[in-house]
Image (cartoon, rainbow over the protein chains, first blue to last red):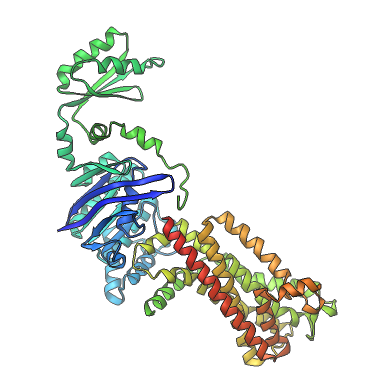
Length: 328
Length: 257
């Protein structure tokens, strides 16, 4: 059975078409990643699936229940960890979890036992009785996840679980999520704009761009689908002639998806080892000073570029939320 | 219905516990009304006309300050809602099977309970300064009910505005804009007989004044229970109206997510 089915979801906020026909499905028990730059529609998709937002059209089932027709049934079956922490800062970790459990109809010894077990599981056993205001960013995030798990949901939504965490806390969170996926036998839908995160955690990913799913599959399949290798050529400062360098590479045989990232020209070629001499001599011939060359297997970055024709990092930057306005 | 009550109860417990962790808040809650009482009591004590039929100005003033405190508390109570919106606690409850109504009503209930506690403190201070509650036990009950209702009327309004504007600065501006004018358009500080005609006419439609009149009947007059009951009923109706307003703006918030 599919744990999540989304069919042709549309949602418009005033001038912005946030969802423009989102369809995908998540199998029971898998970790599924929605990957896309900021502003692609990932969070809106999650808000629809968690019953917070009504779609303008389309249909969605979560754990077999229709989100529009039986929102309250869905709410009983899901855990939701929002992009921005939903922790009550003035309450202790334990109090946060107890209240959430009571809202879900739990009580007494089973509830207290469950809270103890989860505090242990997310590594907050020693700080569970401290007020959450004093928690670090990583601790708040782990508390968020524990809150989302109190009632043993079937499906857990993790919206950008590691945004705002430092690299160390992020790595710890990855280990955490992997462990939860195993121990709690959950279906997890996570959204992220970190390519490595999707690559590391998700069994399958769907790439979201401008309110649509552009491609869906395992990270390995998606990368394997792009034949060849990526070549990155770093150029020394060339006072505005970088675009000319891109043109030079574009004209070479076999060079695809040539684009610029900072002062690095990237291209996909059938065979890196064969292409490098050609590229170097072409650039050298036009007087471009090359500082380094690397080749790599295609990454999800390349997958994104291939399917959308746009550069992931640039698009992410462009939609960086400036000041988060509430309610848009 | 039982679910609504249970959820409201837990959410009230949560808010109350959070407030109890703020020592400054507790100090302000207890000390500020006392300052009003002592300050105004001294300031106007020589002006014998102000006190209406009361035996001392402090006796006249005490029920007024109880009400002032209750409605000020109410007008500011939307700040807690803004805080919960900013911290995304509201969204977390919305994605869970929490009673929607409880999210709003718990704030209003908490404002009412706070007002009752403050009213008790103020009455005790008043007693120490020689105030007599002429209405006896019933008088006490009336004062406490009036203060709770006043706080709830304005808490409903305040939470409604909080859910509509969703910004701290706008909330502060609104509370200030509403608070002081309504205070001076009521008989908190001086009896209705001394007001200019137009102010006394307006004050008849001011919910703050309904509370003040009821509380003053209970403390100073110790009678007039008929009109007093009417004032309380008006306050119940006003509470229902502002809570409906807050529920409506809560829906508009939900639609905006």
